[in-house]
Length: 427
Image (cartoon, rainbow, N blue to C red; front, side, top):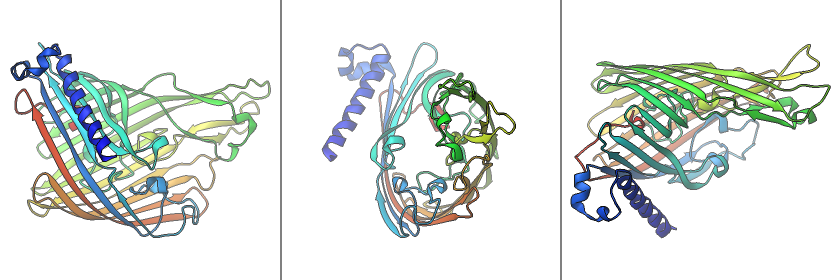
């Protein structure tokens, strides 16, 4: 398996280098000439890291998410995932990627393609290749898969745990974007059309025959925008999103009409404050409805709701209100030692037809001590706490974890100059 992985990484590297040079207008024959490569100005960077995590879990969570601490994946009732006490090892955080900067007569073309080994969706619990970034940008215009403008990547603290604070926004989505402002001081403006999508919870009426032929529909892309003001003390960022979620009744019935829809929306205010020469405070607050899938850890966007007094449409859907909070401090003890400490939470206003075991709120906190004697090596330990509160069952769950990690990073640049301008993935 190790040999096959090496071959896959080598093939990906060769493909990326070949594709980037071809995109710049070079012939296949020109690829073999070092002088032609230097003259082209094309810059390639291969980067990534290998990381190993050892986790002692004092409680329990969904085994498909064994190496992360997500409040929504804690048990919803006693012994849902067995008894307490587990030991886990993981290398799924490891990453591999490549970047290319290709000069043109006007603006540079920038291309990014990278992945880690953390399986999600149908691959949940697996160690398998998962694309993170797959996008290109020419001047102010770009498209592909990368961080939504609604989120703020810089809120993510310097922690070991992969998933991170549950109350922050974190969603890489397929999009086309326009970046009309990008100044050296960090002031930026973004607007994007994003791939739509949402999830729903039929709750107490999930097994009703009338609801078995309901199909979701998304008539328009999600529209997101952000403005980031860079200052000498840090930055402040205001982001917003609007989205349209519909559902269609595919089983015509004279007695009922279950067609419907909601409009989701969200507003986020985030920023970083340079509290001193060794301290950075990361903050974010989010308010919205029907935007749970943009959160780092929140469940469904729409919940079933009674439509009292309406005999034709007795059940409809409601965009669930959500609130997210995150506050983390990154502190440097010295050139080689650092600590991140903070707290995060998500609150959901459940609809009246969700079950008593539906997720209502989650909390997350952690503290660590990290040592980096040289830039390419990092190790340390971290304590994590997560809490889940159900809708109305009275049950709640806590998880306490210790994680120890070792990380080896690498980066190699080829061709062109010594460096290149940052892309949106480095925001």
